[in-house]
Length: 340
Ligand code: CTP
Ligand code: MG
Image (cartoon, rainbow, N blue to C red; front, top):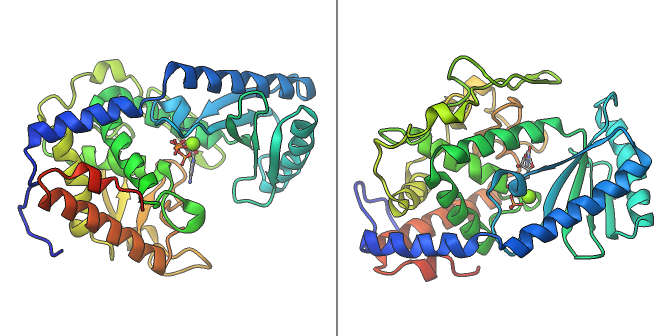
């Protein structure tokens, strides 16, 4: 289990690449699934505009940034009510009202969570059993979804790597921020960061390129970045690494190379910051900062803050397991993705 510097996967890389790419293709949602999600969105929209004719209804999360994988048909929807105060209390009240309204509109298993950090209503669209999470004026999520979508357009290896990592995290049950592991959003940021770190880099840092062609301020957060991705086509082409090399690099980093004591992953700067720079050195309430991933816009938000001592151990063991399987088995995929 020990780290062996310079070790490489045991498998023949070309064969492993082929298998990984086949898996990525299988994991893409089918046109039928996409259609069901679209239908669900329309059902939700028509229920909402009756009550709030001036509202906008946005899709965000993986269904909006191309990173969804099949058999995971939840959709993330944001209700935008212009002019509404953005404090959590008001959002909580709207969420209560939304709950009643959605129930009357025939939605099923309606569960309003007005006290959550981001107040949300969870429900299932009756007609086609698509699961929906709806939040109110969650503008940061709309903007960070666009940032991720723009990174996805830059190099196809990002989508491929995210697919494999998300699938692995779901299979190994380390993809649940409510239970102390990491959200899909967090894994995607870890993948973007890895591709920013490769030599030569596969992805640029869109938030440090100038000029900022996309500009939006959300509350106290400045969400400006360079979004003219057409101009950046081919940015990563000097790097010839294949998917299997990147999957290996991902797990090798998180198993053995990451400086868990000091480092903060920062997609915003395209590098690592230190916990002391962020003042994330001690536990405040339930926030422990054991694994630190900086949100690209909401700079006080550490996406790893849900990880506690116990789940940190679980996560670390899973990263090590994955890295060992890749390093030591001639045909690693089945074992790598074995359900926990
Ligand atoms: N989000 C966020 N902050 C978090 C978690 C999520 O802003 N701490 C927002 C992001 O916009 C993210 C969206 O919520 O894109 C959905 O999050 P999540 O479900 O974790 O990611 P998905 O990419 O939708 O993954 P999955 O396919 O597993 O649903
Ligand atoms: Mg989602």
